[in-house]
Amino acid sequence: MAGPTTAQRGAPGRADTSARPPHIGPEGPRISRRALLILIGAAAALLTAFVIWALYGSSWFRVEKVTTSGVEVLTREEVEAVAATPVGAPLVSVDTDAMERRLRQKLPRIDRVDVVRSWPNGIGLKVTERKPVLLVEKGGKFVEVDAKGVRFATVDRAPKGVPLLELKPEPSASLRRFGGDRLLREAVRVTGDLPAAVAKDTEVVRVASFDAISLRLTRDREVIWGSGEDGAAKALILSALMKAEPKAGQFDVTAPTAPAVSGS
Image (cartoon, rainbow, N blue to C red; front, side, top):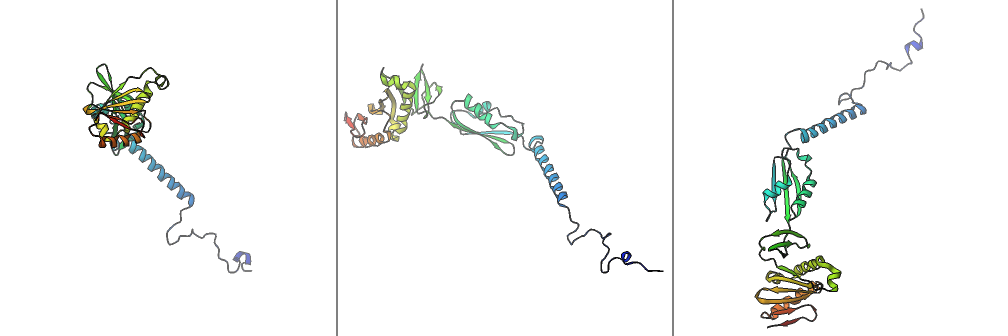
């Protein structure tokens, strides 16, 4: 009987690999790239779901307390009442921008406010109040004006150390051209340029026209300032004049290059 053919025996020197098991390296079975990407995606989805649940569904990150800082004239109670913080709501869902707008609209004394999330369960209200630099008397009360020329509050008593504005413009081209609001801003500009010692002693700021602004100081002294232009130069000259003539009654710095003193 004839023996097996060459084709049946297989090619010389070749092993039969049809039933070889998958290769297992020293690190264990290999995971295909596709399976690895599926595992990573599933883990990311689970993590995302957990984070969303923790932020919105759990009781871990919900508003429990409100803190207010920076108030001086306003009280914490009135600021927090207007803020209307949604206590018990998820901290991440609080509309801080809407709260800031509401506070500025309903409390004009607020110049700036930052509503911040204080993790894990708080809201912080950081308030900056407007500071009055001038007062306008109206009906026995006083309207406070800040350094931007904004009339922001009416009070029964004049705050100490804030000068009164006497805005009595003369009928002139200046008034027709600039108007009362512009003259008010010029008065504010002048108060911002005053030397600290002069500002402390200023009781009244008088505005007759754009270029006719004067100050009444303590001890019956007067400063003729002129327009609001060249404020820094006028402040330096005024300080020098007051040191040189401490008993003078009137100081004129309308023209900083040609100042004058009288009443000494």
